[in-house]
Image 1 (cartoon, rainbow over the protein chains, first blue to last red):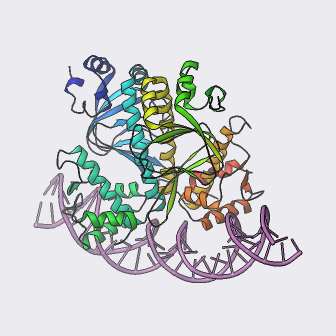
Image 2 (cartoon, each protein chain N blue to C red):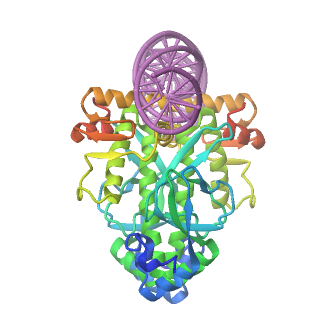
Length: 236
Length: 236
DNA sequence: GGATCACATTGATCTAGATCAACACCAGAA
DNA sequence: TTCTGGTGTTGATCTAGATCAATGTGATCC
């Protein structure tokens, strides 16, 4: 079988980890694995919510836009994250692959029904949703009240945190060095800034030896204490 | 019995509506009704998550702050809304009463356990959390990418929508006139602006006959089409 | 190697919204 | 009635970050 939950690389981290072997077989029948090329969209803002999915490999962004093209990235998804809007009829955002990716897709109605029949699965989904809500609320403080320097510093810390989870490197704490899965424009769209401002803030941090930039995608944190201070209060 | 779910005014709208009479009796034993004066906090940012609650009466704000006092309102709560962080150990925000209020409080550990034993209740909680996540994501676009005029217009439309729900007035559509449950500073903290900018935008809308302001707390929408246009694209 | 293209940095200028500063309005107290 | 304190408006100025405009850089293809 091509599409086997038993062999799935994220089965222990995704919501599926709530299921026992029998149930895995059952949900397996409802799912299909789909490959998505970098740049391709999986879900469109405003469309009916017809599918949900688990990210198996790669990375995605959630975006919401205004008619004139201004765009805000409202979420990022990595392997084992859940995508889509269960129990609701509209998708309020677009989901686009940032890199070549694989997802495990369900029809929303199948999934909704399966979830209702498996409370442990629903519990996992609730926990994820609550965690995501906390994260999103944190970014409201960032977008509403932080300066450009604070935003960039907060962002770098959060990325080092999240990428530490998914890579198999240093346990626990932050990662010293990591590769951003996206370019400057995307960083700007996450932080509610322009590409130029992001660039200037990064070079500033570099000049002050808070970070090093081996190349445009890689970031090395040299002084995480100082970065933390900048993130919280803006003190250089 | 003072504390009777049977007679609760929000029992049909709060998550409790998932429970049958027997279960209501059971959850009743876990809860106590608490009155909170306007301005008092129910939960503090950074504290351990020891309680959760349903709002019975009044209104609350969720806030997150920076050390120097900058504050962002990251959510508003009205009767029948759920407060607090179940299945997690820290509160990431402060919850403060905006008006004299009543809540129905549970110890978090009691509540967590009860929820796990009642999948229908957990389902309601999940639905609410998903809806809230959608709402919060919408405000990320507002905070990250909208101009002051767009923010104020969006805010007025959202308030007219939400207050229509809780009051027993016009069914469905927006409310023509409504009373904001808070002052200009709070509006500023919701929109990531200063009090002066909010004030200027409001008077601008008044001058253009898009809204009327009978007094500082009351707003009447005169031309909701135009308000909608301003909210989405900024065209005056 | 050079040409091309996409992306990032850097610099010069502009502007939306912040900040600073009066002033207005209203409710309650004396 | 006047006084007083809190809240809101309005005006003048300032500035962080946007916008406009080159200029760099590095990967891919010939």
